Figure 1 (cartoon, rainbow, N blue to C red):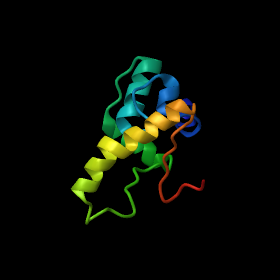
Figure 2 (figure 1 turned 30 degrees about the vertical axis):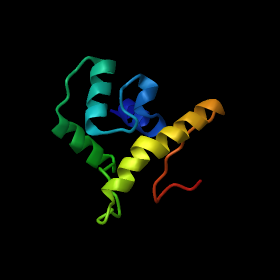
Figure 3 (figure 1 turned 90 degrees about the horizontal axis):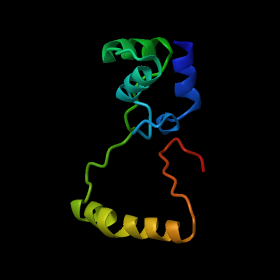
Length: 102
């Protein structure tokens, strides 16, 4: 269990070639299956995470008055432009939340 805990703390799932960008119970379940060849129930994973002081986090705020038009424009126009520019400049796109200090 200590190896799994250390992997969760030190690495992101994609380091282990898992199709997740952040750890979730499902990602941990797949990691355990990949590394140890055993199926671990999600409830057991939840219990271990609680024991280790790792709990699922929910956003502090939610966009109640979210504009569907603005979201669609961002997804279809703005973000693809950002991706294109990053590729041209050999750049990296970083995402953060209210806890990220950049």
